[in-house]
Image 1 (tube, rainbow, N blue to C red):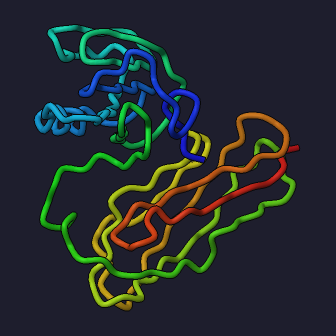
Image 2 (image 1 turned 135 degrees about the horizontal axis):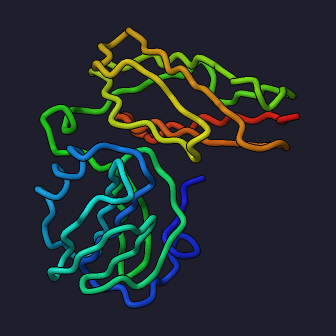
Length: 219
């Protein structure tokens, strides 16, 4: 499921200002994404920006002239660090507030002509994957085919997973009407026991993000 800010959707955050930043440094991502996002930051009411970097040692200039180093997960209001969070994501994300409460999140993307394209529709050949029982040393793999069933080009903006043990590979080019693209899902078990993970495909379809779930039992 989507990780939430604080305890969940609609939960008030302590010491939240109207314009604030949320920075996540999970140890992956790319510096160019951060720089693009930093270049596009504007003071906006009820908006939280989320960024990543490729090392926990990167140096950030924060709003109000504040600086931060060596923090794994930070919640920053406009002037100071107010709380630590436990979050992991593989894409820079933007979290939105309304009246001081978390309401939704979306992947960060620089506004482009492609991102403003009209909506289309798609079908997935599977959205529920059950690998059954397998040994911890075995890497699981499954392919999911997405077909553009609409009349406009399909753009996949981002694909995120609920943990770093689940990864997705896919071809980035746009998908014309009637054509398809393949997602290759890998799961590397970190511990034994039953599990269920979620993958969210963000794209230009009305029901975005498309959710794919994977589950199994690690022996």
